[in-house]
Image (cartoon, rainbow, N blue to C red; front, side):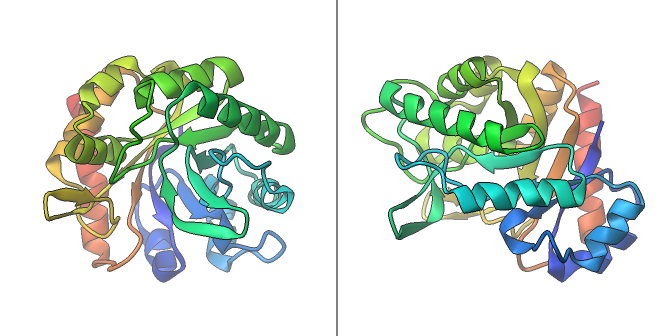
Length: 266
């Protein structure tokens, strides 16, 4: 059991080190060098705090073969950190040398599923630890979708054995922006394959919800966490906060709100 954790960022490294009750941390894999880890991460590892490398650029939803160097970097991060697993996203991020600069949703079609299944199997073969994949937030949906996101992820899990990183903030975002029921997703997703959970805050703008990771977690997202915990006991729940960092006490109170939301399920 990983417990309740927080995303480690260089800007709040001392904060994370001092914060009581942190069960695990997650680090953006592209932001660290395995051969020269930040001292803060080394200190946390020495204390026995698990560190999970979280990739943002692998692009398992792309039609091109996975980049060997990016895979090797993820593998090296996992080994250097003694990580229990590696996580990434079910997303499209680039085509050739053109980068989207964002985690874009994959068309939920049979053809796209074949591509993702093949890429996931390649990633699993290259990584020294299990892989968990995260559902992404979206501002738009593809008109040719043949499945819901939960159905797509369910078939992906069934065919590859990959674990899931369920971001309940992303479920909420897609409910607001696309009308996709977050509760129906929780009822459909193969939660027995859950690795851990993300929660985060965002901002509303002109009728859309933007998953900014720069604000307090809204109550509807915590309610979804409670609903998830009523269905399955997650190994870990992690708070993402990526910019406009608040005072240490605010981050600690956010972790307490997460614990309270989990406790309500029991």
